[in-house]
Every structure is written in structure tokens, then in C-alpha cells.
Image (cartoon, rainbow, N blue to C red; front, side, top):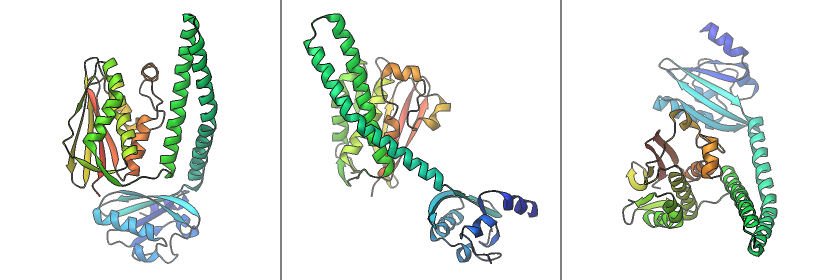
Amino acid sequence: MSLLKEFLSQVGEGYLLIDKEGRVVFGNEFMIKRGLLKEDFEGKPYYECVNNLTVVSCLAEATSEKRDRLCHFDHEEREYSLYVFVGSELTVVRFSDITELKRYERSRKEFVANVSHELKTPIAVLKSLLETLYEEEDREEKRAFLEKALKRVEDMRRLVEDLLILTKLESGEERIRREEVDLRLLIEEVFELLEPQAVEHSVSLLNLVEENFKVKGDWDKLFLLFKNLVDNSIKYNKQGGKVEVKAYTRGNYSVVEVSDTGIGIPKEHLPFIFERFYRVEPSRSRERGGTGLGLSIVKHIALSHGGRVEVESKEGEGSTFRVYLPLE
């Protein structure tokens, strides 16, 4: 124990050691200098000597449930992440100052939002000019070039729109309405929009959601979420394949599954597919279109509803995405 305490005294992060009775047996200098821990902590219950109520609450939940926990909190104009490792004899708590990281993240999001907003107008003007030239051009060779240019401009427009949506979702600026949504009707409208694409790929769309199945959420945001999932399921499906959507209740959640019979996702890529611009195979993704932001938008819409999204996939056999939406 003395060696462990000596080591933790030298690191550049905060550490607490709490025994199974809930008493603090060690706190390093980081904790005291940052005002997170009282100087006379030794042997006292953590809730008496930790100077932050969010930290106390996080520790109480972790130790009572006997499971590791990650929390974030502010203290004296600094931002921290807190990770609780719960052991049988000792609970180890690590504090990291993430103020600069958060500041960088906010700056990055603001930059992306500003650039995306500034690009909207010139892209719209360029698209309008190309459409006019295309309509007035009689020669097939030039029309073919203009058609390709229009497709690239449309790709740029979709990328900018997705970036703006994602930035608003990440920053919490996008307001989420709470209303009762008829899920079967919503999925029917998604299918209606994507039917031409499904026909082009010879993919069948099956709406297996029961009549009058209701979820709580924002119709427009949920429409965007399931449009992205179904769109992906069509793009990465096989000729003659199918996409199924079904829903059921599990515990305190409505669970909506979007399954396909497509090419699947290699196991090593699964932890990363909800990150922005992540592509399993860049060449394959370019060939099939898309901005690389669809699944990231799906994740953030689910999170903004207090839910989550997860995926199961087997390469060569297909994928199933599950969206969990709280009943209340």
C-alpha cells in the first residue's frame, strides 16, 4: 500500500483510495490543491471530506451498486472527468482535468458550425448555375460532365447539412420536442421516401412494427434517425436482400430494431462506426455514397432523447441496429 501511495503522489492526476467502509485512506496533493478534498481527510467518510456534491453522489451510486462508474463535473471554474474503480477491498477514484480538452472541443464545434453555415450559400448558388447550364446544353458530352458536377455539388450540400445537424445535436442547441409518435406510421414514411433507392438495389422493405405502437420523442429527429439507419441498410445490402424494422418494449425502454441481410461489419470496426467520418472501407463507402456522418447523427439523436443505440453484425450475413428510447 505504501508503494501505491508513493506512486499516486507523483502523478499529474487526482486520486482517492476509499476502503470498503467508505473511509478515505489516501488522497494525493492534486486533490487538496484543487480544493476537491479537505486536508484532514484521513479515516473520514468520503461524504464528509470531498468538497463536491456531484462527486459524492457519483461515489455513492458506484459503491452501492458495486460497479465502475464514469462522471463529469465542474469545480471552481475547471472541468473534470471522474472514474470510479470499485474493488472488493478498495475503491480507486481517478480525477482528470479536462478543461483544455473541452475548450478545444467547443472551439472545434464552433469552427465546423461557422464554416458549414458560410458554405451553404455559395453551394446553393453553384448548384443553381449548374442546373441552368445543364437545362440549356444540347450536346450530350457536355451534359454528361455537367451531370457529374451536379452530383458532386449535391454531395457537398448533403455534407454541409449533416455537419450543421450534428454540430447542433452535439452542442445541445437542437431542441427536442417530447410527444407521442406513431412509430409504424413514421417507418412507413421513411420507407416511402427511400422506396426508389430500395427498388434500384432490389431490396425489400418490411415494416413489422405493430399498429398503434407509440414512442416518446421528436417526430422530425426520429424520422432523420431511422432514415439514416434504413438508408445504410439499403446501401450495404445484397441484391435481393431485405430490411426489416420491428419494435417492442423492454424494461423502461421502447426498442426499435433495424435489421438487414447485407454485407455486415467486421468485428474490429464495430466500436468505432458511430464516430463522425469513420468508414469501414473508404473505397466501398465512396462507391455507395454517403457523408460518413449518418451513424454519428443516429447516435446523437438517440442520446438527446435519453436513449442509446447499439449494433450487432456478422460479416457477410448482415447487421442489426437497436435504438433504445425511454418510455418516459
